[in-house]
Structures are given as structure tokens and as C-alpha cells.
Length: 327
Image (cartoon, rainbow, N blue to C red):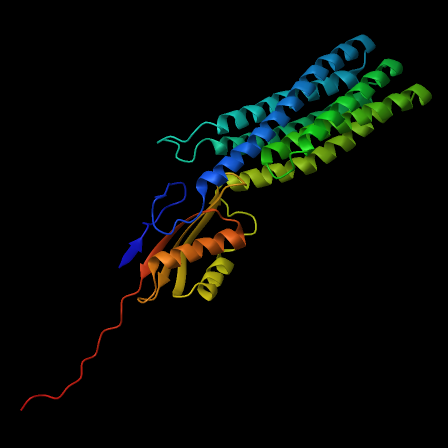
């Protein structure tokens, strides 16, 4: 016979009132939202700084005749839109769960990170195409004005990077935003170096050369964001979660457990791993105590705060009755 919670497929809620459900969901969810508010504020500030300086750089490019500044302004426009998308994702994730979206809107932030990562690929390819065109068609640039605009851009991007880096790099949306700002930071640094080289030597090919280098760095970073966010969207197991290791550890450390099967692990976001499993126990073992012990092990060893555990009690062996036949 089976006792306790019924099996739950990934993506479906479980009964929070079931015995042995030991994790403090309210505290964990509240802490996650508090951290999310800080992330939201940081991304919002970065978006405001990026959007404001984008206008300054566009005007500077028009006045100086610098395609480098105009191209970087276009780059910052894409980043501004991406940062706004990330900020909106944090706002949306604060909405409570409902009967149609039982896990709330947290997954939208992962989707936004995936889109941001793809946009980084587009940006890098666009930079390379632009660099090829500039090799074939060099343009005259006012190096002095370019230098001052590049210095201002460097300062703004350093401030944005500092604001975002204070939140840490665990959240995918913040990581994607950091990568966008890092791309802008490298672009400003490249524009600064190019301006200095143009001022002192007049050698304009330095600009497309540095642009290609920046695009390669962006591509490498973008791949990691797309890979990890795609893994979450495809319901992949959380980082460091090994199904065989989990099953063996439960059998070894939880008294009364004979087998663990039907393990499913996934994540709503990288901060919210989920696990469902079926645990077989001996007839003399307590289903409630076993469930509590399994959840404690998952929480303390694998940082899984939310688990659905189905208990399968093995049937008792038949009782053999021996006696002598009456005459």
C-alpha cells in the first residue's frame, strides 16, 4: 500500500499540509523575493544609465562623424532594451501564483535571460560585420571628441557594472545584464584606445580590430548564459544534483528505506530547485518520520527546499503457522 503524498509530476503543485513537509516555504519564498527586489533595483539603475548615455553617445557620434560612436550607441540601444526586459521580468516575477500558474511567474526571468543571451550573439555578429565594412571603407573621425565621449562612456559603464556586481552573479538575469554592461564597458574601453591611437598616429584600422576582439569576448560569455538558461527551460536537473548519488545516500542514511525510484529534479529558477521521488520503506518504518528525514537530507546536502516524497510501504511477509493435525 502507499501512504503519504501522491506522486507529483514536475510542474504540478503538492499538498503543503501533508505530514512531514518540513521545509519553511514561506521563509524561503520571502527571502527569494527580498533578494529579487535588490536585483530588480540594480537592473533598473543599469537600464537608466545605459539609456541615458546611449543618447549622449548618439549625439556625439553625429557631431564628430564617428561611426564607432554611432555603432556603439546602437549596441547600447540593444542593451538598453535587454536591460528593460530583464527589469520587467523581475517585476512580473513578483506577481503571486494563481490556479493557472501554480509556480507564479518566476520562470519568465529565466526566459528573459535566454532571450538576452541570444541578443548577445546578434550583437557580436553585428560588430564583426561592421568591422569588416570599416576595414574596406575607413572614415575620418574627430579623435578628440571621440576620446571625451569614450571616457564618459567608460565612467557610466563602470558605475552600472558596480551596481549590478553588488548583487552577485547567481541570478541568470543579473548575469545576463552584467554581460551586456561588460560588453558596453569593453566597447567604451576599445573606443578610448582607438581614439588615442587615432589622435597620436592616425591609424584608423585599430578601431575594427578592437571591435572584433570585443565581439569574441561577448560570444564566449553569451554561450554560458544561453546554455544555463536553456538547461532550466528544458527542465534539466539542478547543478550538482546526481540522481544515483541522491538515491544511494538516502538508502544509506535514512533508516528503514530500502529503495528510491522515480526521481525527477528540475528548477523553476536557479534559486528554486524542485524534486519528486518515490521511497520504498520496510513495514515497521514510520512513513511520516521517513518523509521528514528524506526532506532534511535533501535540504542540507543538496540545497533542495521543495520536495514531494511518495512513500511506498512494502507488504509484510506472510506469517507461517505450524502445528500438528488432530487425530
